[in-house]
Amino acid sequence: QTLPVLLLSLVGAVLTGELLQKLQTWRVFIRIEELFILVPILLNLKGNLEMNLAARFSTSANIGELDLRLTRRSLILGNLALLQVQALIVSLISGLLAFVLGMASRRGVHHALQNPMYDPASSINAAAGGLDATANLRGGYFEALLVLCVSMLAAGISSGVLGSFMCSLVVLCRRFRVNPDNIATPVASALGDMVTLVILGGLSSLFIIFMGTIISTLVFVALLGVIAVNVVLTFRNAYVQELLTIGWGPLFAAMAISSGSGVVLETYVNALPGFALVSPVVTALSGAAGSISVSRISTALHSGRKEPYLVVAATLFALACPVLGLFLLFLWVTGQAEVTGLFAGGFMVVVALQVALALLLAQQGALLLWKLDYDPDVYALPLLTSLLDVTGQLLLVGAYAVAGLSVEPDQVAVAVEGAAGGEAERFLTRLLR
Image (cartoon, rainbow, N blue to C red):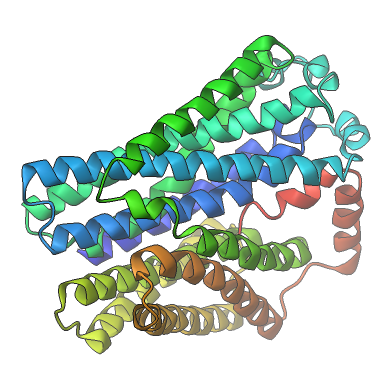
């Protein structure tokens, strides 16, 4: 049950990285640097929401709450309404934070106009609204609305799609006697970032056409109304009512912790060849293994049954490490990164340490939270995934150091000089964490 899901996580991480590479050439993303800042913040917070939903729903399935039709219907509708509330509020905060940070760094326009990737005749640039489409929006009311509306619309649409899919997946797992704890959270992680990025990219290029008009204000007001409606629906649902007020702390703590991984990536992405491609895969796979462990432990604690912690951890370790080894083979075959014998050995040591750390933190963290009367389904996953982001990248830096792989100093200087021309390029390095 777990091996195909881990392979899916690997594919999802690689495709997400490729998608981010494509988005960096879109004019709207470079001309409006707040969108660059928005992506890592939004993906971190929103990804944790969907993984929490998957973990909670898996627990409900395993303790029998989904076996009755009326209970199942109420749980599904309540969780989807709650997810909309959380996603829209989180995306609103993410958009505000991105806009404030963007206002603090306004050197991107000059570099953007000189960047050779800009071709006024290209279809991508035309779809983004042309050279003047963003010139009138910079730093003002309409640019703020662009960031907020795109962030909230992308979060709301993707949460509706992914939330419905995850609920259906868990129900099907229950019907076919497959343990959703082994499947749901990694699938949510693998699909969440990719779906959100696709929607965010499309909306950014399309929605900029309507910025500067009354339409943007009306859309924003309508989104606030959607939040209010879903708050009422959630409050009236006894199964999810209490979740309206709990679980926010871990989400924003995870955002603060994950900023450390952005610092690591920004520091080393230009100096270490292939680092931006390797690091998200290592953190994604270790996070998938850890999330499976957390979900299983939480179900065991809620149902009062014993979980063979050591056996589960050993199984996940034995599956995750070879999958990451396959990724290393993929890098070597395709030539997307320099894979020497020394680096391969260091990489596998890093993989083993990272996966072992993920499983250890998952087990001990879930048990500690339960002991302190906190639900692991709500509190464990955000903290776990953010910590793994930081540790995974630090361990990878060590592997590069052992292998002696780096870019020559003059190449780093060129990369830094190019990034100094615009703050958008500085924040781009955080996208692939």
